[in-house]
Image (cartoon, rainbow, N blue to C red; front, top):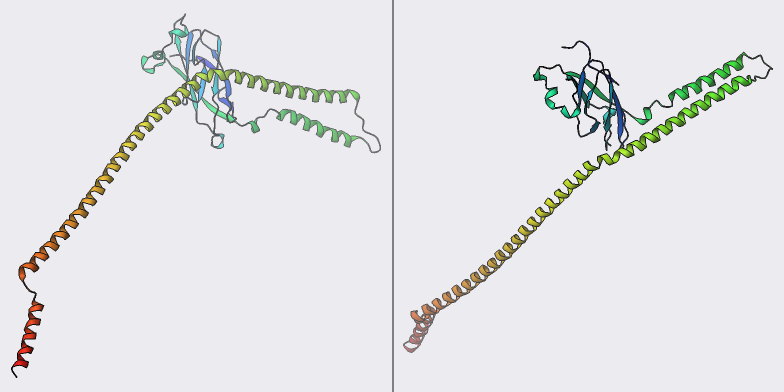
Length: 298
């Protein structure tokens, strides 16, 4: 087991300037401290969020290597600008003459008995408002502005305070340098944005894949909708058939009721015809007979 570190990594943490819907990149510098060929591999807890180029490689003895980590454009801002993402850089000694094509995942397996060096890098997000780009310039300006009143206080009263021409030129030189540095930084920002825009086409395959996936999902949804439409039409036809059957059943019930009433009437008529005179008629005849008999035989 080796006693010295195989790789020296700078910076110790990944700092990204976080802006919504904009990419941000960070470069990592690796130095091979050993006298051997060293293979390295970069892993992250959020592989869909970051793009690492290259994510593996071979570093010859005492040589260096750089890789770039690009954070994809984010739509939402994390709470309190805190990020829990981490990167792991694994490294191990490989035989002389090993190339990147010879690198396999088995080289970094811990159960193989080889020495695997691991270093973790955490992610730090920096907001544009807290970026300390202009702080030194403002600090120098404040210091120079504070120096002038002190020199005025030292001049006796009644004498005009005129600084030497050389000092005035030096002060203007300082301001021009500050302006130039600010302009240089602006130019660097423009170049960085231009490089970010140049990196955008590299993400097109992912966008194309996403578009293909969305197109396939749309086709699947359309097929499902067509199937549902067919089922709904079949259900409508079934409902119409059931309504027709209910209407026919109602008509049959009405016909049966009418036939039953007709049969009852016929039965009543037959009973009247079979029974002779009604009881009321018989009673009236009997009463009339009694009255006539009473008058005829007093």
